[in-house]
Image (cartoon, rainbow, N blue to C red; front, side, top):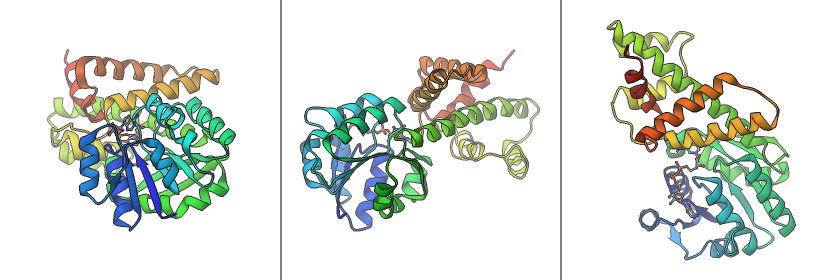
Length: 293
Ligand code: NAD
């Protein structure tokens, strides 16, 4: 497991792939964005022209892609990973995609005799940079154990959830539904503090040692709200994608989640107002406007 491929050198993929380079792996990258590829080469990586080249050369290929469509193209395209993989390879998708996409890729991988794990991550860009990501992995436990040393270079907590390929994604969607709730809760609660002239830094210190504390409050407040800078981060659009998947999952399992539906509506409005590429903590600014009577 010395030659590692990495497809999708974005906010998450760039720090993950360059951490592997730092650890002494030979890492071969691919991204549609040539600027990202250039940055990756400057960090010591190599680039190939086609996804298929990585499938032919590498022992393991990891992907970190923004949508189910991108994942489908990279894995299932004519020039994609499954069509060109050798039999010893392990393919690991760390993107958050629809559970159905995990299944579609797993079916094609099984047919081609190729090992595949669906391994979404939590912990954000900071977690990717600092190697503190949490991996939630669905698929064969044997294959999981085989690649565990590699995953442990990238994350502090690596869980095998179950052999069902979409099991890691299910946990990840539960996680992101909660992130959506906490972000909305913090955005509204802080408006009362503003109105009553309570200093937000002092409020943070007090809530941080009370039951109102949450890691999302800490992240959203310290990194974004206090700095008044909402550059990503984890964007409103990415969160919306995951909330949509979570609601689809609920629907398919005959669950009615009325509060989550309201949440989805709120984030959709924020995206439509042009905040899609801002970090999700920007909801605080939107709620500030909404809360004025
Ligand atoms: P990003 O948009 O910053 O990066 C995605 C990269 O993929 C871009 O560089 C883009 O050019 C590239 N890409 C798109 N389509 C491609 C294709 N067909 N072939 C090759 N490259 C392609 O996104 P991100 O924030 O790095 O997120 C990546 C994944 O990780 C998403 O599924 C997201 O849900 C998940 N995730 C993100 C965070 C976060 O905080 N950003 C946290 C946890 C999980």
